[in-house]
Structures are given as C-alpha cells and as structure tokens.
Amino acid sequence: MADSKQEKGSNPEDRRIELWPTRFLHSPWAKATASLPVPAEIALIILNSPLTDYETFKRLYSRASTVVCADGGANRLYNLLTSTFPDHAWDTALRKHLPSLIHGDLDSLTANVRSCYEELGVPVSKDPDQYSTDFGKGINQISFLQPDVRDILVLGSLGGRVDQGIGLLHELYREQVTRHPDVRFWLFSESSITFMLQPGTTVIHLPRDTGLVGRNVGILPVYGKAVIGTKGLEWDVQDWETEMGGMMSTSNHVLEDDVEITCDRELLFTVERGDAK
Image (tube, rainbow, N blue to C red; front, side, top):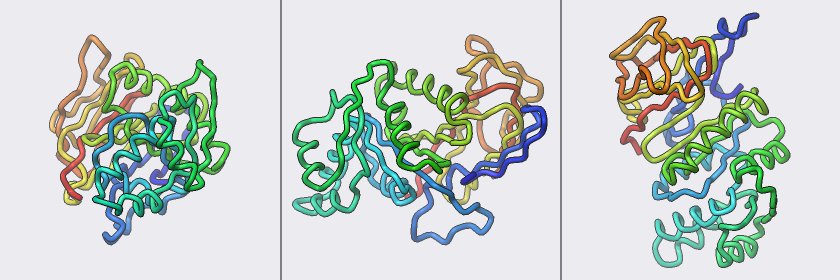
C-alpha cells in the first residue's frame, strides 16, 4: 500500500500500520527522504469547496494518475487557476492542469466552465442518483478508471458548509471501512490533513523539520466511543476512553516526529499543516 507499511495479526486490534501523510506535500524539487515508501497508484478528487492555495493543489495534482472534479469542483479548479495566473497565463495553466473527468449530478457545474473544459477535451459525465453524493460518485469513477488505486487525495474537503463536511465524514467511514478497505483516503484543506485511524496501532510520521506540519493535532471519536493510547504528544494517554460528549483529545501538540496511536475502533485524526511552501 502506498505510503503505509502494514503488519496484520489475527485480531484487528493487533494490526500495526505506518503512515507518512506529508509525503504528498513535498515539493517536486525537494530531495525525497530515503525512508519514505515509493507511492503506488494515487488519485485526486476535487470537491465543490473554495480553493485558494495553488501550491497545495499543484503538489497533489503532480502525485495523481487520475484527477476527478466532482461536479462543482470543476468550477473551483477553474476559479483557482484563473485567479492565480494573470492575463492569458491562466489559459496555459488550465491546459497544464486538466482533470481526467468531471463527474456528478452536474447541478453545480456552470455552463461556461463545462464548455471550457469540454473544448479542451475533458469528458463530462452525469450521474443523477440522488442517494449518493458527488464524493461517492467520484470514488466510483476512480475505482473504474484506476482499479489499482491505493491512495485517494481529497481536496476541498472540510473548509465549506458544515452539513457537507459532516456528510463527507459519514461517507469517509462507509468508503474506508465497508466499500474500499484497501484504499486510504486523505482529506486536505488549507489548514489541516485529516484521515481515519483503524483499530490497532498506527505510527504517524510527522517530520517537523520539513515545515509541512504544525504542532496541533486532534484525535476525534466521531464514529463512536473508543479506548485509545498515545505516544509522542504533549498530553499522552493510555487506556483512555474518548467519545463525543465526553473526553476528547483536541488541540494536542506533537512533540516527536513519530506519533503512535492505539485504538479499539475507528477514529478521525487531524494534524495542522505547516507554513512550508
């Protein structure tokens, strides 16, 4: 699996995984750290939330073999590029950063953006199913286009409407746990990197000298009560019950480059992004 090493025991709680979330944000011109795993197949989904950070988009785009704009995500990409580049330079930027596909129920995609991308040869397809979101539809398309995908990067994930954000976390659980257990989903916003931890022990490599991560982290029991243990944080815990409405580890601080978390059920982990460009 890309960007993870996994050892499985007979009991899911005996599983031990290593993750490198900053791997996707390293500058293409920076010398890769020798200990990092070689990425396998990676895909990128761009959602319909505001995008203003071109550097993050560029780095994620450069890692992905397949790029799907989920409906209005195409508007956001178009607006990002046309606002980042002056005069007619944005036309070159559009051509340089074409998505593989625009897909969804197409109730948000504007006519001018659709026309622009179609003229550039980007396929646009419609799925009218009202019982699935554009995020879920995008994942289905990636699974079809790139069946060997192992990491799906999600851009424009948690920076928009609250109801859409909660819906995304719901779908993240369904896709990660039920439908695509061999695929890891990474949610990127301008301020954080967020992903799911599964039962067992996860070692999260957060090299602070890269400037790609900040010090603030959260371990969020959004999927139900859990018992956790941590190492490498300012406020470590052992055999600690956490649940919504009870005790939670938010605004904790990274003290070590390797953070270890043990849990008995799925959790959401989020780490603050750093200032490095």
